[in-house]
Image 1 (cartoon, rainbow, N blue to C red):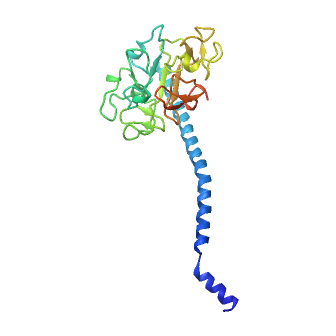
Image 2: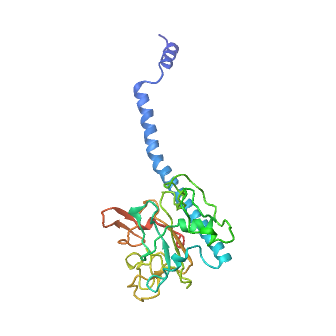
Image 3: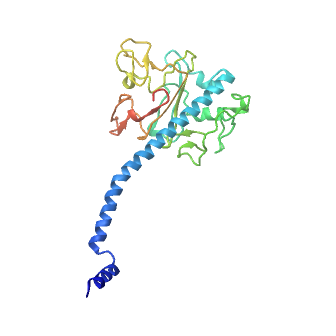
Length: 266
């Protein structure tokens, strides 16, 4: 067999098993290098989308306040304002996130569907449940201030059929309003010493303790009328862990408070 015939015969045989395995190995190595990068890009996209949605909601609430001279919330929510708990936090109550409950430390509990019902001028959510905006009592202008993405069910990111607006990981946004009109917000989670105490009155994540010069009280606040935050990629928050740290909660779950996405501290 001459050289030309050998080359022709060799080309007709195609790849040998060894060559095929080498190609597969190279592809596997490249995939192993690329997948983490792709994962990080997707995660970053979700974080950016969360910030945009929070900003849109905050802007809608500010526009509502400009027209109606109060932030969108029921009289019941405003009625909880006391010296011990001057503002109101819309947590996870009734939003299908029982392991992530953020309590308002008050008798009245609600999640952000109360806000969306008012901002979207709704008297009924898509699942048939009534909003607090009965007879348009909290949006007499019937103006739709907010037009978020509506999604099916009650798990996906966006406004679910129950009216709750959730982050891309499926958890409800936590929203605190300045219910006593003093220009400061005390979020029921971030006001806690165990979470926000830093150095003296200066707390973590742009909080400040007006009540105690040493920061030894649950009075950390932010100078703003609205605080909105997300549990972030890990979907958790723990009052046993500092705002800028990660650790283990009382149930032994790993929690990273530093991955929470905050409207007031980028």
